[in-house]
Length: 348
Image (cartoon, rainbow, N blue to C red; front, side, top):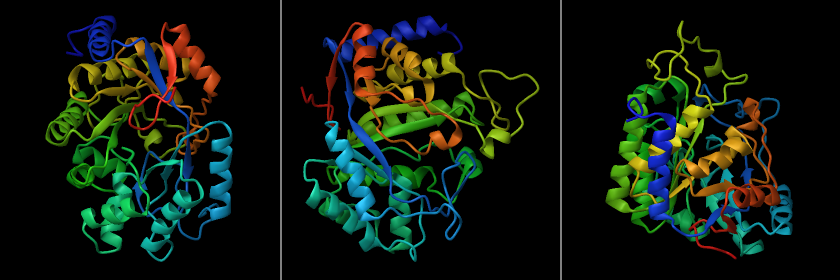
């Protein structure tokens, strides 16, 4: 379809599909904060500038006091949700009880905060490090206060790609197994894709296929979010490109995705993933204008105010928007801006 349709033709199809699912006069966003509780990580992701090795300069684990201060700043601006993510820390740095205590602390001190925490690679690592089945890990986290799981760490759900850019993280079936188990205990999750590096168009379609099939099986995905690889300073960003760069990569060379390609993937996701209710715009990587345009290419949600973001910004992309900015972008596009929660229920 991408080969046969122009950008505008694909965008029109996606916009019509979005309006069929979301005929309402509003578009949504959430006020939350990304908190990276630690940057210590044993994985070897070539697209990441955020991680630190145990004992290295800059390696950290947030104290409860520092974490509490961040949440209080979020509450002060009316925020309702925290996204917790960290590296894959060794067991001698953070044991499982540390993670459970982290969740209990937040729920005890800030009971109104929704905890959207621990990506599938983190949960898979917990299972291996602490010798527990994934389901048991999830049940213990849920009991301690975990509400939903973010879709981070999906990258491209094709092992040929993952084995080159995500060494030491969960592979495709392991990632999907965490999502399946989470949905099985009634926990909702989001799903992501990071594209525009060494993957081919066929790899992107395979990724969407795996998402659609699991959603048919479980119905547990609340939303799909895709964004483009940010290359600045990363090992993957130094991978040589082909002599003549093209839209479709060859699976060996780096082919960066520009804004028009991002819009194509948002539109394609909306058309293909007809069983996933919500598509988020990624203004964090694309900037506010393309984020706004995404609302006409299949997206029905502007994502998060994202009071704090450390991972993408570590690769040189530092777009920032206040809540008023997001509301203005939605309103200028012709919709009524509405706050939501993680389940896409309106809060106003």
